[in-house]
Amino acid sequence: MSRLGIQQLQWIGAVAVIMVCLMMACSTIAFSFSDYVNYRRGVTEFSRFHAALHAAATISRERGPANSLMGASDEERSQFAASLMASRDETDKDIARLETLFRTEIDQSPEMRSTFTAVKAQLEAGRQAVDAVAATPLEERSGAKIAEAIQTMFRAADRAQDYRDAAGRSIIALAPETGAEVMLASMAGTLRERAGRLGSYVVMMMTSQGQARSHYRAEFDSELNRVLEVNALLKTYASTTLQSQAIASLLDQVAVSYFAGSLPYAQRVAFDLNNGNAPTPGEFTTKYVPGMKSTETLRELIETTAVTSLEKVQQKELKAMLISALLAGMAITVVIGLAYVLRRSLFQPMLAAIRQIDDIAAGNLVQPPRMPHAGREVGEMFRRLDLLREQQRFKRHLETERKSMTEELRRLSQTDALTGLLNRRALGEAVEQLFAATGSGSRSIGIIMFDIDHFKSINDRHGHAVGDLVLQRTAQILSPCLKPDDLFARYGGEEFIIVLNDATEASARATAERLRETLERAVISDQHGLKVTASFGVDWRTQCTIADWEKLAIVADRRLYRAKRGGRNLVCSSDNGTEETTAVSTGGSGPEKAGDANAA
Image (cartoon, rainbow, N blue to C red; front, side, top):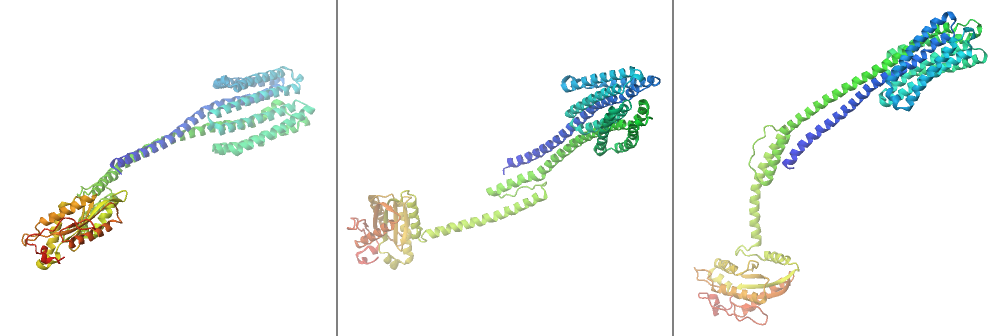
């Protein structure tokens, strides 16, 4: 890997880790911030929902003094009328506040607008019915009229609950995190409303007779079942969902004050109506309503606890967001510090190690300076590189010696030790390479075979040392007469062979003649005044293959001996007879005299 690649890896790695940390941190912060915003909105929206719950509760509470007023005597009338007026003022304030808080939804949502309009209309109808009954003298008030007024107020409460539920759905759509709190608060409000209706059904039974009373008794029983169901749901989920021991304690208090107090009282009154000692509606309401206070307190506590729970979660998400930002900052700081340490202790030494490896690979074995800040493992790598560098120095020395020895062995294996020419085996390899270089596998070549005349006599007369000198000098004298791509080899003893590349018949014969003349004129040894001649045999072929060249050598060898038999110092290039070149006596060269005609 190049230096640029190492640096890129270092910075890309550091940037990648930082980016991952930033993305993780931003993701966590974004989620925490989103949750924080959502829960903060949830607190705000739940506060608006509280207004809807409170308005529904005040409409429900308005039935208590209304029922008392419709069943009151003339003496009780002023007291219950004042109480009803105060309750109505509270209801009107809650409805006005509700309209202010939900003005946007009322203006934009047809459901919210129609529901809110129905609440106001039904409440006004219920009040008119109550006022009509209350204005009638006591002895003229019928149970049917009272029941109709109460049921009109029921419908107003139903519309208020419809609006409460619509507001709850709207708030859950804006802040889904408030879903559980909205449903629990709605159930607590429902418990309060249904408990109030139980009391209203008792009043309707007190002011009616016969089949009407039986009908209201059935409605009472049905409403009782709903109250018990809602209470069971609240006991199961409220304290667990909101994680509030206070709600659990208040549910126990509701069980005592209402389900073991006011509710049994209402049931006894409902059962004892036929005994003739039933209380008046005002007396019943006075005793029944205090036990219902616990249900109202339960609703308010669930609302308060829900808001507190949402605020806690909101603060928790804020802390989580701040902690995430802090951890992200710490992580980035650690990564930057680690990148600096790695760059100083690992990457820079690694770059230096790579440069040293490149130098070693390039043959530069100079000892580089030390890296003082390298880590322990990288330092060990530098020590191994020093060892490798030393081994490379020793290996280079061995390779130099081996190369010298190999070259010498190759030269010795391919050349004749005496003359320095190719030996017979090397000649065969050279000829194979010559033909291999030809795409067609054939080429025009000429073969010249020659043999030193009377060589045995030279050995016998002057000794083998002079004979060796004759062979060496023959190679030295004739080599310059050949082209660079011609092959010149010692074939054996005093016999030599020349392979002419791309030669014609005439050029082959001319080359042989030129060699014969050159050797004839040359002085082999000034000390001995020695000259020699040679006999030449020539063959040539236009299209010769590797398989045919030795046949040419055999023909040239045969013609060489024809030249010897023809008188030596001749060139023979035909099997029909020797050529016209005749032997020329060399002064002081005994072997060429007639008396030595039988010498080799």
